[in-house]
Length: 84
Image (cartoon, rainbow, N blue to C red):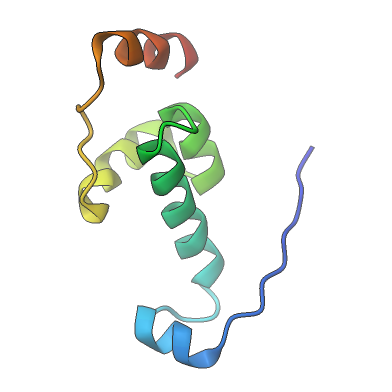
């Protein structure tokens, strides 16, 4: 099941983010996925699905957001391996 969320974004927000209206949804999904992953609320696999990209692509994009790819504890790494 897919849920749809509609956001109203001020034009100045898109300008500040240097994002076109056509790609704003993709950019917001990626940013949300990265943040939820960083907070430990989503596994990398679930975050990749939220972002709409393959897991390998998601993991490679983490550095663009200043998030360490391999900062997982041993327990978290085991969970990622099971969930990914």
